[in-house]
Image (cartoon, rainbow, N blue to C red; front, side, top):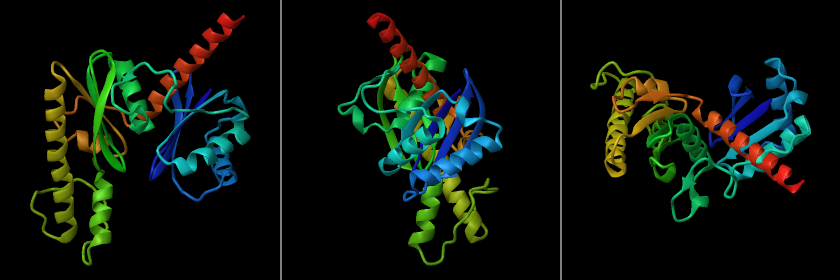
Length: 265
């Protein structure tokens, strides 16, 4: 059984896989000063509530864009499962190459997204991730990550307006009914949701032009299903794509280690 953990700036997403199928997934808040023992207790509670025995976990893979949390979660997982986690970082085995000047600058979540998309599609693609940051990861036909585009996520933009102004409230980003808001909340929804519809369309169109040929666009992240319903440029949606990419990475590295062990004997 595989435990895949994606540590993001706002939330940590956890998935439990049996073979290639995800059995359950959870989302908890990423608390930057939380200690390893606290994460161990949180993980233990979530797994047991889902009927998953931590002792049945034989493989763990972690993606993290919050370095201060990586070690705490690694330690928590080791204490809970007695399994040393594989952390996505430069040098691990992938099914894609990273064709940028400094591969270490590419977020491990974007790497996992690209790995999952290319494993599934086997062709040029763009992964649009609707998270704390809105990211666009470009992958070529031959499986090279060409780079990315990054913008503030929708909730990040909404929170920035609320915290940076005196009279704009926090809002939920439900579907706007009109481009013309008749109160503050509906005006904010119209501006943010419809504005990002235009942003995503333009960036995807430009990236497709630069890649050339047929390019599949897949969306993931917390708001992916809502936004994809508004976006003609999105071809498919998988809110849990990052976790599936971590699964693929774990399998690639497990098979590589097994091959190396056989050669050594």
